Amino acid sequence: MRVVARILIYESYENERRLLVEMVARLGHEPVVVTVPAADYLTGIDVFVVEPANALGSVLAKGAHLIDPSLPIVCVEGQAPPPMDVPFAACLVEPFQLGQVGSAIERALRWRAERGVGDSRHRAA
Image (tube, rainbow, N blue to C red; front, side, top):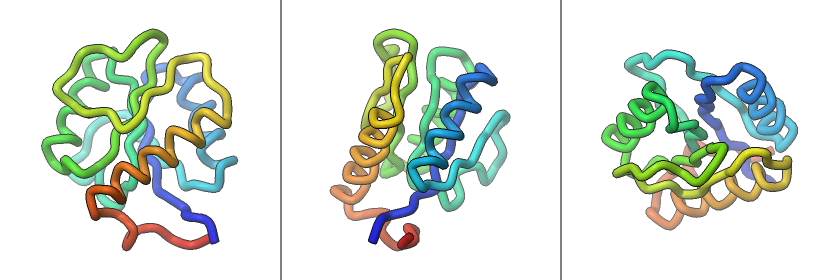
């Protein structure tokens, strides 16, 4: 049985966002896209994949960490991740391949499980 996770995605560039959504879906997970923050944007989310280089991405990453410090955040960057006060469970440096996205999600889910959180929201596929 495989774990199906809800993956929240924030990527400011539409083409990259579409690619991430497609990759997450091909890996068998449920992609959820956020383009503007809402009060409940983290509800039911297992992993947050975010591009923190721009202002909104940075705000979303910091806000997510404040709301739920156990939520694993995967950083997506064109270069090395920016210095932030947010612990990243994994980082993806563009360009990346499907296997790298899958590995980052698996690492993030393990990161959450090590903190004793998350298994109750996952669904078996």
